[in-house]
Image (cartoon, rainbow, N blue to C red; front, side):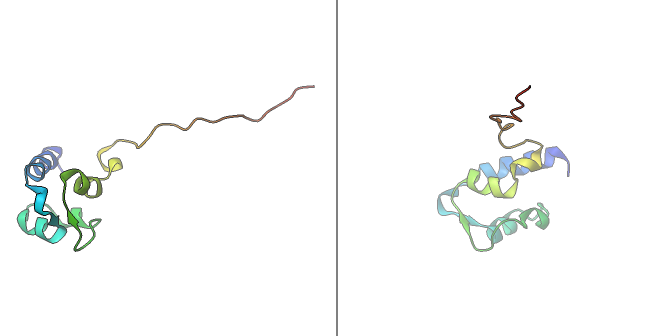
Length: 83
């Protein structure tokens, strides 16, 4: 999927008035140009009242090439006490 299409959808979705909420089904009807496979992780019937709430499920962080969080800090270690 071309990146410019994703950005176009994101802009269109962000510009919606989310105050009344949208379900997956309503958004699929409103945006028939977005492939239905992109909605597969969205629970049916659930209403979303903000773009960010919806987008976090629609486009998980890993899908756009980012990693959540950073490397963990290890404490301790092998603890080799030399003799």
